Image (tube, rainbow, N blue to C red; front, side, top):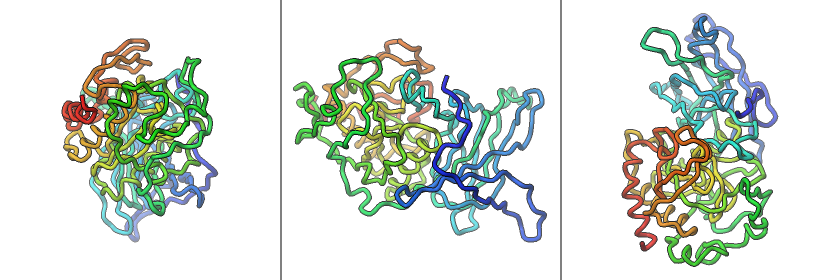
Length: 436
């Protein structure tokens, strides 16, 4: 079991006054708990406002609130939000809905629903990150654009319409409002062509023959292939796509942990959608990514952003988790199957919306290159051993497509029906890029 995190995650905190909205002359709204605000330093752009939820109703038979929320109020500017709770193992059975006010206006959005089952994106149990005791339960984050007002309601699921809740809501529910900060100068211009200087490399779990850090970080070859890989990898690696580096999208390296985790190889590319909604422009993609990064680290307690790569709807590819784009960096994207895999997230929500061709083409090119570095046929099948995913028990050997959807490894809707339906064509295209 992951340990609960009772205290707020972040740097030095200051109390922030939250003012409820009310018509002129109306009776003042009841007092609400104050927010905790984690504000970035000049070297750490962005900030997080953390608002505790208040009970709206109660179910005495369960001894817990059946509905909690945040009353409509003014807040400091933010662009991305999510809900977190103390125990990373606790599931939120119910609905989470939010509406926001566009910054500097009186325009409120319609109610939007957050994806509540986000724990399947976390780090595997039995790993250094998964057993750190720092993680929290969380919904998927939602991109809402520049906003300065918010209202939230969380309702526990009901059984058979009887009004009795199926399960109590998790303890310690808080609404996280993320300001991703301004784009850095020259954002999206840099490519991930050079490997980083290592902080602290962590060996793959249970292995004793991982190369020394200096070998792990040897400069890539001219073609971008890590030294020491078999000739088959060089033969079948597709052309390397343009990759916008962490520096290029403005990742602040002060946020993440210094330690880096690796697998032995990469056998499968798991495709995800970020479930952050599609209401972003491609110029805003770097901001969306910085928001997700801050939410994963500061709010959810992860070591770094969970995905190894991200792709926006215009087909731009971004380096995700730190450690080197050519390296088998172990992410936190597919619970039970993070080892020996790579996680690729298409920014957006694709349950009922078709992904753009530019995005799926980028997935095919990236997977062809990344899998090819390790000699994997993008059209083929491989076997991974489950670390315990809820869908497959720990230790079970699972036959998977080399390019799989998140739902192939975990019981989830991710990457959405419309994106999942494109994966057969993605595999075919990726095989072509590998000249197979």
